[in-house]
Length: 573
Image (cartoon, rainbow, N blue to C red; front, top):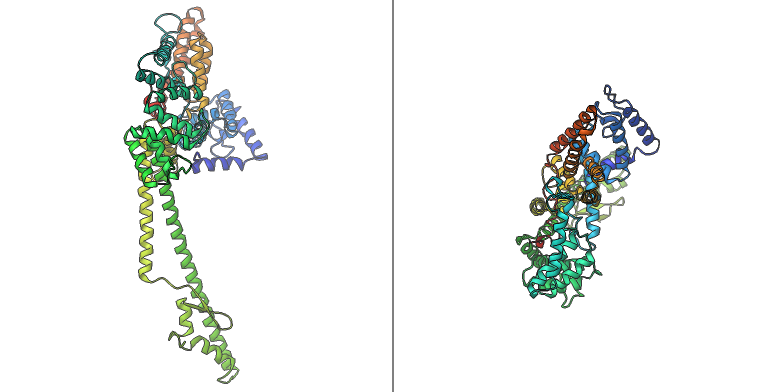
């Protein structure tokens, strides 16, 4: 399940509490500020974090209204609006720059992206396929022109695919298997002009596995386990993973490690649960550079840390409960002692005899018990027995000895240390996987830095992680893919509009391509335009280029190309 930090929970809770008439008042207040234009800054009319409070003084009327619309769209779950507002708050475009206000928007967008990644992986508890990476990296200034000049990338892609298709049919068995593997990777992840098609990928991987390719066996096992292109089956996945494990295929070792965690009794032969063997296989997989193996190890250590932390908290809660119970017993003893003194005093005042009820009460409280050699009051205070209203002994809690208290304190300390050590191991594995493109690992790292879980809280680091993930979401990727396709079809105006939309979401590659297209259009049309339009056009071009430079590709660059996805390590060679 995708995690959500306390920041976003508080954000959503705060917004939900503003429902009904409050939401309408907030909308009216925000719209009022928006229509004030770029005059003097108005007094805040709503709580911090809303457009009415954060709209910058210099924002134009149109920009202020756009922020208001994005705000309510973001509350309604629009990933695009969440990204747009996150980017505005991160860099201060139209609002006051504030990392902590950008964080919940980017986290909510990242959570939606992660949900789509997990849905694409079926039952598999990791990352199998991501949206195509090619549109995210396609910089138009570096590609061949779609109309004349040097050869276009589309022509090159067609030739590469045709080569693999021919090689998968002809040639020696090893060459056919290798070509089929490459085609499988292209169909699974998309690329070279091929759209993602898990079913077509599965056929290519099966052809490669039949030719003895162990990498294909590992990927097939993962797809069959998750039900991507197949009916999900752990026992069938085990058949492929066992074959790949013999040749130390990292994906197969990772898969077998996952099977040993829970056991697969229906497999032939059955796989018994063996946590030690599972961790050993995952570690071997990680050492071979398989990022999914490192991610699974990180999540295991995170689970261990959570268990140890909960046990330590429970121990602390039990200790406090024991203190409260002991204090309550002490107060009860004092109350009974006081009642006895009062009754003895009353008996004395009434001139009662030695055999009276008052003396009997005195004897019940102060007389030595023949079994223990202590008075009833002493027994009550030690909590070995309690005395009910009739003076009958009731078994109580036996207090801990000093040795037992020391032992429990030591156990609690060891639990806290264990939780800290497990958290550090988890962060180490997850960070390594995240740096090599594993987006689920990057998301977990973002949650840890957002909440300060096992590491010092860092808003910039958390925002960087969530921004990178959201930029690989299906929506962001489809915008870039459609823009690239329009450009390749010579529809430069359509491409420019879509890249402009991507630029508003904070996508650096979209900003760069939009600026490049604007600049080319401006230079091409300037000879036929009035001077004032030429000047205005140049201002727009300069503005977009400044936005590109401001982004600096520093808040969402590394780890986003999908190298951590299944099959990506065995991509085109």
